[in-house]
Length: 426
Image (tube, rainbow, N blue to C red; front, side):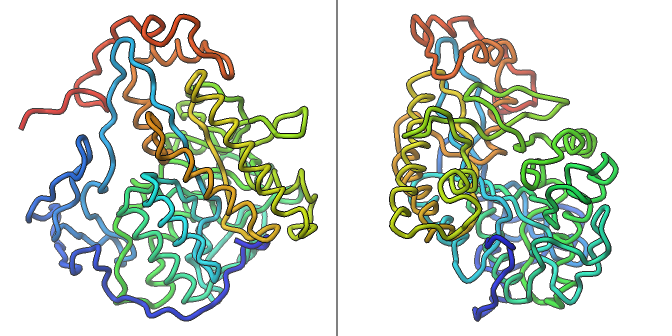
């Protein structure tokens, strides 16, 4: 989104019922519905929901449609097995505007065997005329530093969220008003104020149809109370109190920090899946894996710097991320966490850089480009002792004698019913 994150209006014919929801056949009962069971497309992939298992929630803005399609089943590493190289591409304040970057990167992901995480800003589903419904902590009602949306922008954003989820991507949250710095910024919020903000972020997703009057539109095909398991805070501020609030509200991970390229661990019950520092070509220091930070280090606070330097800046970001990837791939195999915005800063050079990274890494052998949800699922499926040993490897450090002897101990069996446990026999 633009620096103000305001959404532009444009014309698109709104579909009353998404084809992906199988004709929107509804089951209003308490069960999940019965119908033809879908077959997994890939080994270990969760089966899609039965075609008539659409149970509306609340005002029909969201719906229960069964298990999310295209989610691979996590498996425990076997003795001596080299870990896969995970890469997470994530998007702050995800929404569809006139640049059509959300829809574009959905296609890029599909073409390169990738899924991603989209951190939705809740106010992108709240129309300008209903802005007073938002009560931001430490600010007056209706205040937002990124504006609100219009009906068409909401329709288009919902359509992208719907299709993204059905393709196996994750919908997280970037909260609402994006307040940074002093004077009521998120870094000054209490635990209770964070809980209030999270509750409102959920509420705007769960009531977008009522707030726009779109009674006949297709719902989002997930229960957001269950779908929402992680976030990234605005400007990476306020992490300490947010993590406390998120842990108490059932979140599973946070991506609001800065870390080195090492294996993640849990903090206060949440996986710390922070973005990381990677080599920065031409500099002696390392660079955080986020497009905004590359821009600041290249053109300062100007989002439209010297046109003659833009190609170089994009190449520099691309090569930086690729060097970070290669360092992990050949070294400790720590997951690479990358953060972005749907922006055209410096002529869109960072979008081009990200796309080229996706194309170059996501189709490599032993690489999995996944959402944070999928990474958290895999981490939860592992033997804690194996993860602890992986965390002994430093940045870019491969096991001295190879992976087979390094992880030669037989992992403890996964407890019954948890991720990575043998599937129950039918």
